[in-house]
Length: 214
Ligand SMILES: [Fe+2]
Ligand SMILES: [Fe+2]
Image 1: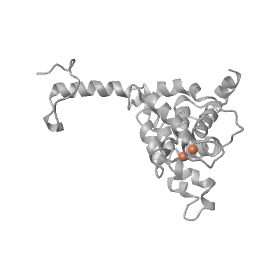
Image 2 (image 1 turned 90 degrees about the vertical axis):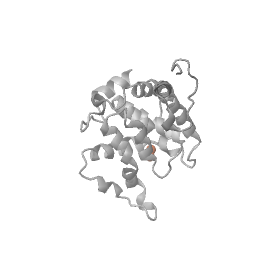
Image 3 (image 1 turned 30 degrees about the vertical axis):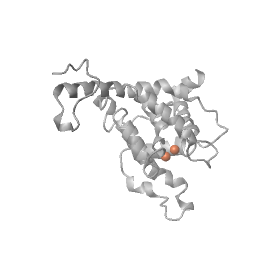
């Protein structure tokens, strides 16, 4: 029998033939791989820089500006990282970029933030749906009554739809990197983090004023 410590590759060609040692070896490999999720996401954000030209700022610029506004509003780390990554799905999922981003965030941030990211596309339509044929400006109404409806309305109004301004003084991506690492280093699906139904404010005036002085 092979020693899982010395193994470099598994022998099986069909999963059903794998041994306990092989699966232990693979699990150890995968655990190591997950440690670098934050760095991969940060690199993906830089790739966003190449996407969606036509706006006055790039997708990366928009993402960092959204996070900067969240930070300056005194929002907590779950909100700031969610704002930073809310459009990361644009790279591979242009038709459901919100769901894609939420899927990445879901194991590591509060349920409130993951839901807002997941449905922000419907809420954003309020700002442009009336200009385009076949778009429903009031698509967000299908979520009316949801416990996080108002949070999403604020997320979009203050951080998302507002963050296309090339003149806004945006903090650098490196400023947010430690926050991304902290969030993705959390144990996945930790009930203390997910806190179903918990609502944290998007704006905290006291924290915001402390950050302004820093
Ligand atoms: Fe979006
Ligand atoms: Fe956005």
